[in-house]
Image (cartoon, rainbow, N blue to C red):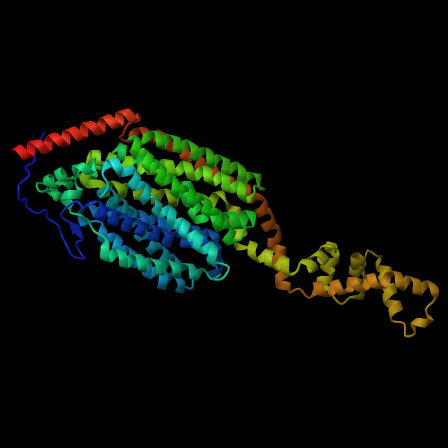
Amino acid sequence: MTRTHIAADPAPIPAATGIWGRQLDRFPGTFARTRYLAITIAATVVLYYQLYAQGTVATKIIADLHMSLTYFIVIQIAGGAIGAIGSLAAGLADRWGRANLVVYGLALVSLLMLFAAPNVHGETSYMIVFVLISGVEGVILVATPALIRDFSPQMGRASAMGFWTLGPVLGSLLATAISSNTLDDHPRWQFQFQVAGIVGWIVFAVAFIGLRELAPALRDQLMVSIHDRALLEARARGIDPEQALRGHWRQLLHVRIMLPALAISSYLLFYYLSVGFFVLFYVTTYGYTEARANALANWYWIANALTLVIFGLLSDLFRVRKPFMLAGGLISAIGVAWFAIATRAGDTGYYAFAMIILVIAIGSGMTFAAWMAAFTETVEARNPAATATGLAIWGASVRVAVAAGFTALIFLIPAANTLVEAGPRVHELATRYAAELTTLQRLSPAVKAELSTRPDDPAVQAEALGQLANLPAADVGRVFSLQRQQNPAALSGPDREFLAATGDRVATAATALRAASAVPKDDLAYLTVHAAEVRDAAHDSPDQWARLWWLCFAAQLLFLPSIWLLTGHWSPAAGRADAERHRAAVRAELLAAETA
């Protein structure tokens, strides 16, 4: 073992200070470390909230900007691609640091949310703004967990990562909670973006003042326990950060890094589809309002948030990751399969869906907190100085998987496009002209065709009124003829009886026909063209969405074998023994350094 000399008056650890450096030359105490972790988690929550705000009002954005669902999905795909590039670029955080990426990323996204997004006037400008937001989010996806790792020894890593993972989950919850409680009073989609922008500026101010990171020589080491602090600082005085990073990409482009990153990215497909399209799914397939759909999504995010923290703590307590990943992966996969079956049934109720969502949320929370800890520990086993690089590989994999999943959405759910593009107007017209459409449905196709070409022809009108009043056309003509008599008192007894029996029926039919004739031709033409396809799409939608959920189920099963590639123990006893060996080694090295 290499001896580390601890001087009585140690030399300072090189650290860049000020608002452009933000580096600490000592590992912080418990209170300061908790503060830095809290600011990082708060920044993560807000950044994801800002990214996910659009999903809560997706149908409104599509309608207001006159875009197709396919184009909206293409925007998400483009955002995923740029986010992947942003994640890879954030691998430079190993050289440039993490804190500034978070602080100034918050400022940029908040500007875009508050001023740019609410003022777009077309689908192209909206795409540009969303792609910019996604690019920054790709950077933050790497920088924030890197900060969490830096301040979290391995023995508390799962707990810390569980809290970090609250970022996307609480971001989702914040988005759905705010929208479900404000959409009725503030129906414009721009309002949701403006609120997200204001919240972002508040957290930016806190982060600008209070967020710091470890100096490179401190963060580039492996820290198993908080008791390693003295040894960590002693070693840091002899570390060359540039030397530690040499060849880091080559070290991490390895099967034990790449395959788990790809596997968890496919596992998270259900989560990302839920974030982006849960509202669309429930609005188009089950007729929920946007507020009700967002309220249902809250069940997912609340349960997932609690589970992440609870099982992160348990993973650290038992010193194992893999059993939690395996059990959680199986539970969530079963939940996703149940969700697919319930979707195909077509008549699943609100609370039945809530129960299924709870199962998925619990399983995925159990899996992901342990996975983030295990993955960062696997990266550390290859090179502790390359944590951000390893997270960049994971972040890029997630964005690529999201883009692939959203591409599949276009081909697997064509009914959704019809329901989004034509469904609202068909529903609005069908509601507005319900009585008139019922009248027209009682007419034969031949009579409707004749009315469109000869609306003033008495014979055609008589035929139409006869069908509406359930009378022969000759009887309708006789009613008209009798009603034109100048002296009704001169009518014969049979004529008066006939008129009394049929006159009101013909008059009612005439009123209904006049109302139906007043429906604008453009509206009728739109219904003629689209009503049947919307009806067919509504019928096909549950089966098509179920196919997508089955794809997510398969992706979750494919994740399970990758667990064996990560470092860590299956047995709590082995985990405790490993921790004790590390403590003994640290004590021995410190003792040797002090007596050197």
